[in-house]
Length: 205
DNA sequence: CGTTCGATGCACT
DNA sequence: GTGCATCGAACGT
Image 1: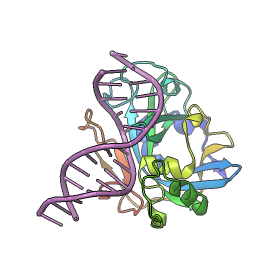
Image 2: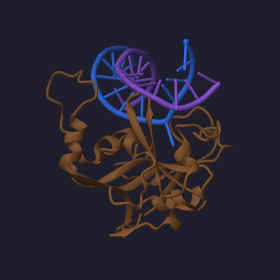
Image 3: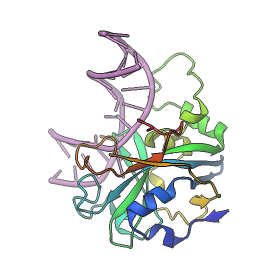
Image 4: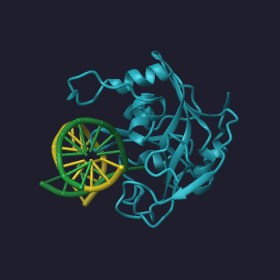
C-alpha cells in the first residue's frame, strides 16, 4: 500500500498532525501484523514549546527529534508505558507528533493477546474481554497493542517493520483541543482528533 | 456516574 | 533524588 513519502513528514508539525488522522500505522513482526487508523494525535513543536521533550535542548533521550523526519521517537513514560511519536519538520528542527489513539484494523487477536498480558499481574480473576474500540485507545494502550517498545525509537517509518500508509481513508471532521496530561504549555490547542470517534481517549467533542 | 491514587523505570539535574 | 505526553483498580456519590 501507499507508504507516506519523506516529504509528508518534512513539513510544519501543525500541518502534519491533522494530516496523520485517517492514515494507517502498521507494525510487522514474526508473530503477525497489527495496524490501526490514526484517530487522535498531539503536536510537540520545538525547544520553545515547554511541553515538548526538546525543550531542554538536545539530550540522549530526545535525539531522534533532532534527526531526519519520518522516523519514530519512542520513550518510556511513568516507568510503565511506551509512547510513540512521529518526527516532523526538517532535520535539526526538533518536533514530533504523538500518536494517542488508533482504530484497530488488522491483527485484533494479536492486539488482544498483547493487552491481556498484564504488566503488573495484580488481578487474580479472568480479565474481561477488551472491546475492539478500546484496544488502542490512549497512547500507552496503542503502543502495547501494537507491540511498539523502546527498540523502535529511531526506526525509519519508511521501512518495512514500522510504517505509516495512506489506504485512502478520509476523516469526517477534525477537532482541536488542549493537549492532555501535561502541566505546562496547556494553552496551546495542539491535540487533534476525529470528532466523536469511539477510539479517541478523553473528551471526544 | 465521578475522583483518587499507586505502579514502575529511566533520563535528567 | 525528582518527575513524568498513563492506566485502571478502588473507592465515593
